[in-house]
Image (cartoon, rainbow, N blue to C red; front, side):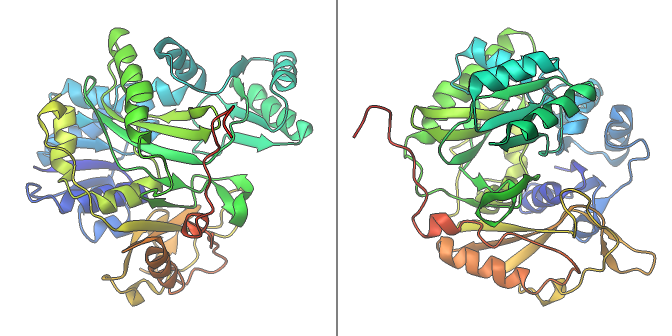
Amino acid sequence: MKPLVVGSGAREHALVRALLADPDVEAVFAAPGNPGIALVADCRPLPGGLTDGAGVADLAEELGADLVVIGPEVPLVAGVADAVRARGIDCFGPSADAARLEGSKAFAKEVMAEADVPTARAYVCDDETQLRDALDATGAPYVVKEDGLAAGKGVVVTDDLDAALAHGRACIDGGSPVVVEEFLDGPEVSIFCVTDGTTVLPLAQAQDFKRVGDDDQGPNTGGMGAYSPLTWAPESLTDEVVERIAQPTVDVMRRRGTPFSGVLYVGLALTSRGPRVVEFNARFGDPETQVVLARLRTPLGALLQAAARERLDQLEPLAWRPETAVTVVIASDGYPAQPRTGDPISGLDQIDDDAAYVLHAGTAIGDDGTLQSAGGRVLSVVALGSGLAEAREKAYAAVDLVDLPGSHHRTDVGLAAERGAVAVPSPEGSR
């Protein structure tokens, strides 16, 4: 197998790393990739950019790639998977029509209603009057989401009505509807469900950390860290998510004539009324992918190809490493508001590969040939341990060896779970 991975972040680096561990994978290509991916895979440019479906298909044909794996959401929503499949090349990732589950939060709510999926009560607003009425109906804490793609930063959760109104107005003035939701209590969980449009295979649970600062302070980001597995989650949770959420959603999409094939990312809140969907994504989430794939023993190439060929029902049950995985994101100065780029990165050669490893996200090679920051989230440091405490210790020891001027990271990824302080609310009416 010769897969081509489309994208340039830490998620794609994790995908490349996992694909290379598959004994049936002969070589891995990446487009455009990044300096870290280039150390282990053949990186090729995409002159037309990530959304140039014809360009991606041309490159796959030129390289003889027999599977295209699309990492980010933007090319999926733009229909790159459709262009690749039209050339007769296997592709892992949903069509443009199916990717609307992420591309439009209003559309996702419509599908959830049809599939009877438990989720937050929501209002779609096109003007300020509707926005004010919706905020009045839900009350604080206010949850205001831009309808379209916003790289994980289009959501505001606040007790401040003026801040909620300001975010909603900015979205509407920018030409996007906004979705106002009721606030969901309880810890959040991410579950990736690989599907071929019919069969659904859930991957291991993970929890990510969306706020920029410790103790969940500051604005939302694309994600500052994650860990897996979740020993505190109910044992029945994954089965319940497949039965009540993922499978009904996949079934509805198929009945609508827009089958969903790829990864259905289910973002959940474990509330006092049971699991509720916070959001759907149409691809592997970042940074949860980094920890989930670190623990996957089943060959990734075989899994993704089976999904692309509608053969998931023929796979053996997925196998997992027993260790705990933790990833910590190192972000550039000013992230998420105004990330500073061009700063030198050093110390990566000091990290013991047996203890931890580094996945590149926003990096580039400068004119002087040195590694530099080139984005907001710069690196993902990943470690495995016999338990959460050991995995955290290894990850943070490696983070301390990285030198990036002005950088910042969360120091509490997985800390509450390590201390046994993550609590799932008791069901309503129980004592």
